Length: 272
Image (cartoon, rainbow, N blue to C red; front, side):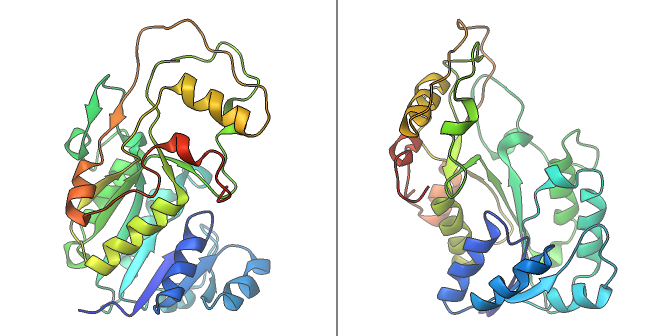
């Protein structure tokens, strides 16, 4: 079935550029925000705006209208509403109308423990009793098989106003200097989500992370210097605690080539 309308729940750092790209490609797009002042901005970008404030949102009518689409992109950052995130997701899923065919759930590679090796999608199982909030939420989504959900576990997010040069600049005794970083640029995030929708890759769980993994010391030193900031000082190598995210399954299924396969190459990019 041809996707015609997409609802993006959460038009922030990732959701807004995704919604803009979908509009550019000819889709009708609903976009949610919690901020009154952003309503007009969304409208000017060709996005049908909805003011949905969670958990205070009391308008079931507005939520129901927002969900009238072929695909829902669930893109709310759990860090801001961790205590109510699970219930919020359950509320949205329960309100899903018959016309909603698919859900694209944005998760994170933080679901993986530090196994001191390369990890793939099978190394973290979505279960109702998982210690990870996101794994429990992935399981909730997967309990709606009629929506043929796809889960995307993104690595560390960079690009736009998120420049990693600011994260460690000037710090001392930074641990794990030789551990690999697992990063992905905003441009790749948007392109991957669009490709999933266009190729109708439903019913999958994907890792989404740049294929190259420079060490923390190399990456954060170069990132800080790219902004003219004092690079961090790293501790003497301790016992290793790391994971190296493998995105091979995504690359294979989507025939996807990363825009920034090495996160070092974009640190001076004008896209930041």
